[in-house]
Image 1: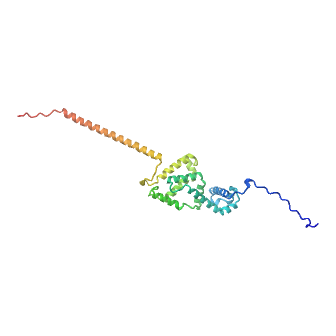
Image 2: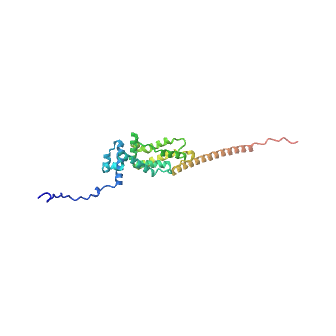
Image 3: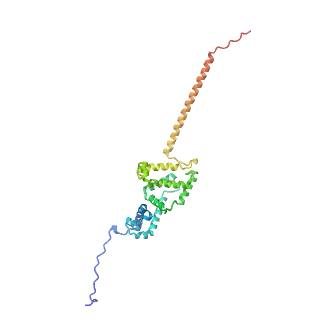
Length: 271
């Protein structure tokens, strides 16, 4: 028999196993979210130069080729973090929000997710930070024109100081712990630091225009103190007036009584 008469049979293949649910391909949006979260962790911990694409992919649980597919590479993924930060910022940094409330919101966002502050610190150390956005400074200048900031203050200097105040608890956690006796991520630290930060920012207002708007409790304390002081002054003035009136009355009485007891001079006899 020839080979043509008895062709060799192809080897029998095992049927393909259906993938388990956790083995199915991730949908693109979920893959992007996993990569972004992993990138924030890696960049915040190691900086841009120290973070490795393979480590980001391993943390996300995906193939590292997907970083190039979704973001074009490491740099594109890094830029995506900036875009996400700006998107989060746009949800609360609106022109109608008072300056003290705006700064408090930045603080709370930093305390809620310290990774972005750590990433900003890495950017500052390596000189890769994009820096303050021009619209941020122009917004502060607008607030100055409206009286939320004293006319004698430099908006650029104020902005730099506000950045430092927001990042201080996370950039200097040991110092914050020693000064407050609290963990920087504790609710009590958050409450105390936010309250003092608000008060400090309100003090920057142009008081000649009545821009400072104290809180209800602060206003009540001031009103109570003013009322108490006014009452003390009124009482003191009334007491002093009474003492003067009494002294004058006593002096008049002494003069009157003395004049009545003195005998009249004898009249010359009439002729």
